[in-house]
Length: 206
Image (cartoon, rainbow, N blue to C red; front, side, top):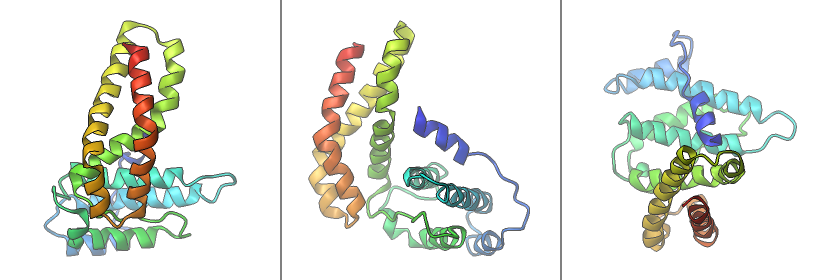
């Protein structure tokens, strides 16, 4: 799956060699987060690499989108963000923004700032990843007809459908609670398009 492969690249470990001055500075300000320095080095590397990629001919902003989703997903999974409104956790996010600005040397990859709770973000990320996996699932149906693969795809699509149904129910509330135009646009697009595709895929696999 495309997004998972990209996230694996972002998750590669880096050497904490003391050479990143911004990370060294920020880690002293967030001394209660013991693992922040290691994560800081990783994030700085990823932002810089994405900026380098965006200088290539015919590059798109897709990797920047993936990086933003990876960032918040990682912050949640390592318990740097709790299940509150992301925007309200300014102590951490201000430091992340500082680091991003320094690492984003050519200003080609903008940090997305969300005004939703972490649970809703994780649901949104699942749908975003699915939107990137649709083509691969459709292509692989012709090559992997074995029951094992059918079960895997079916399980994945059912999981996404459950998340989609939750967010569809909460859609109006989510849009009203956020000022983030990206979130609003994202949900508007998915409500119209992806439920039909989800059901088509389930009918094919079942």
